[in-house]
Image (cartoon, rainbow, N blue to C red; front, side):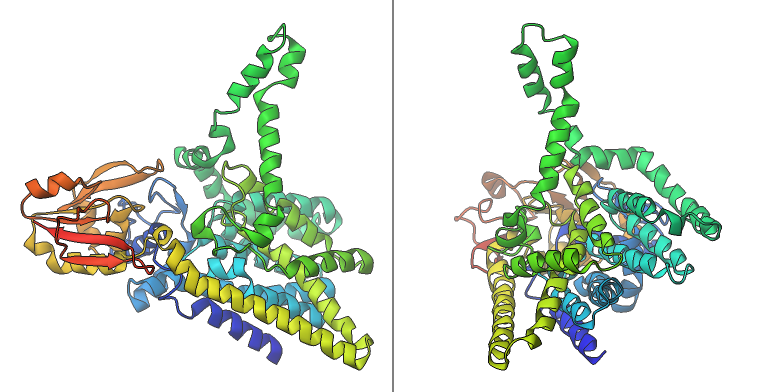
Length: 534
């Protein structure tokens, strides 16, 4: 247990250290989670004035509410700040290290393998990245992991099925993806563990689960639930209709039954779905390039270490060869993990498929643990060299990752993390009484929520404000003005004509002829914001 404690402490330290350096900013989604928690504490209502919602409207992305409620105690104790919003993710990410140890020990019955799984998760680039920010997906992965572990343990103690059901349901109230992944996983569990599950003593668990899921069902079929699905779904993309019509038109009788049978939207959407599904198993995504979205990745690195190609292949070999009991759980989880992300138009997507890190780590940990355990069978000199090589390869891989995360990520991806608002907004708060109007660029995502967050704007006052609303460039709902604050593009010429106005713009929006009151630079030295007063 001392080794496990050491691995846990390593994982916790890696998740909490130097948060002021990386990630290089605090994005709008994190600010929304924090400010809504703050608003609930102060008023019992979210930013839109809804009392204790299960789903938070936010930017019309209708965030599942559990992460907000997990954040409330920390905001209440520590105040509204970046750390208080991120600490639930940090803690749940750290506790996942302990959970994967116990799950792998239950599956593989080997201490070396269990420790290897825990160690690999503690240093996992994929898991670390999403544990250090306020990512609901990371919390949801913890709950799925807890659900799977207690499900396996319920074979010996059926009372644990209560915890399993509660954990699975909690994941669906935390993030969107589990609403597809968890039902798929449970369906497969029912198919493969039918005799264990279909017994009278489990009926109360089913009844409770149905009751707890009823509000979620109403949410999913509501306008809000359907709007979120349509916003990211592959079915909202009308692009496939054009090639279908074109292919039909190449036949002499485009309207015939067989032509419509072979050329139709369903066939194209199915092909897109399977293509998106396979994207998540692409070696480029897993080992070299990572997620195409810069906010979800580390520069020039995959979601896993390159050395895990060897441990994954070894793990698959040992699973097949050793025939461990219940290891089908790992493959069932891996099978359903990409389902939700595959239904969206943007793949591969490390955020939406985050839960996939657990089954992959279980396989990789099995490979590493079994290889390490078999080394004593070698001659002493060979064993020493082999162990040294393993330690050196893993050590260099971790050092390379930390270099990319702490040095290169802030310099290359600071814009994607909305760097600079933590410095800009205190200046605005300090000087706002000197100006009648304050114009803030909307070049960066959802600036209004970052202003509310960093200024700790009184939620009760905000609820009463007259607000102008619109859509941002990504199609999400946004606030374009409230109080004396306006969020919009800034024209260079308008600054010369305005009076008693404070402008916070980008380097492109503020002309060289303007002498800024303050300049906030990205970590690479390029200006993020220029502040000009008239």
